[in-house]
Each structure stands twice: as structure tokens, then as C-alpha cells.
Image (cartoon, rainbow over all chains, first blue to last red; front, side, top):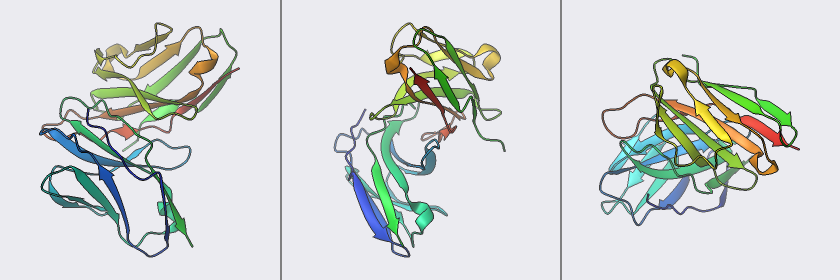
Length: 110
Length: 116
């Protein structure tokens, strides 16, 4: 399973766009990149998933360059409720044995 | 749609006792997973059911842990006898069997187990 590396923590002010970058140099051809969000005392919650280029949903955007060795989760106009831990994971179909790293603890400042 | 529910939300037991955790997946989800986070560590995979069959139990720490999913609906995870190092948060997740990509896992809020 590809190992991921992401910043331990980040701070941002309300209303700003936040970009969290994840490195996955050993990503395999059939791996997908998936991001989860976790609030205290809750389980991880799926945010977005992509294979290449750009994916956007109502919550976030995911940018994946052509070499797929990294990805960037973009959260537009963050609010205090976006304070959480964000996990970047890679996995492939048929092997949903997810490997969670340390994640990025995002703190939104009023 | 009801989410993944886990019971109990908290459990405090003494070393050597037995505890059974329960997980009710989202209706229709054939995939069911158990994960756990022990103190200060990362969330780790324990095992994966497809319906009532164990697909992958490579993450189960030892034979004190027994997971079942009779009838392919809810699942239980029994720890017997519990040891101090079993303390942590046990998460259950479920997903549909997808046809492409990774079917998102829907996690419950976990059971916080404290062994004293």
C-alpha cells in the first residue's frame, strides 16, 4: 500500500481557502486517492475521491497532477466548523483496507 | 438513511473481563470493517467482512479478538479476556460493493473501550 505524507497541522482564518497537500510517491496504477475528515468523538467521514486531474463536489475540490505522486485537497471559504483532522489515503478497488496516517489537524481561527 | 451505529459508545471494564462491541451497518451494505485507534496511535484496520464471510482478518491483533457477522447483517467484536493494551476507540464502517474506484466507507462514531 502506498505511503502518504501530509503536514501534521495547519492553521487558517475563517473565509479563506485552505489547501492541504499530500505526497504519495509510490502510488500504484490502480490506486485511487481518497480524503476523509474526522471531528472529535466521531468516525472519519468521506469527503472526496479521485484518480487523476480535478474532482469537485459540494464540499471540496481535489487536484491531482499528471504524475499522481501528490494531491491537494482544497476547501473553499472555510468556517470554524471545518476544524478537524483530514486524512489522505490511497487504496485500490478490491482492497479497501485503508491505511490511515497521522492526518493533518486543521484549525480554523475566527 | 440511518448511518452506521455502534453500541455501546463507551465501555469500561477490568482486565481479564470480556466485552462485546456491536456494529449495525447501513442497510444494504455488504462490506463491513472494523478499525481501531489505540492511545496515541493511528487508526488501524482489523478486519473486513463481505456479507457473513471474513474477507481479510490480517489486522486482528491476536486470538483474544473474535469478530462475527451472522446472517450478514450486524457484527460483533468480542475481546476475551481484555488486556490493558486493548484500550482505545473501535470503529466500524460499511460500504457498498462498488464497480469502480473505492466505495466510500461510512464510519460509525466508535466505541471507546477502557480497560483498567
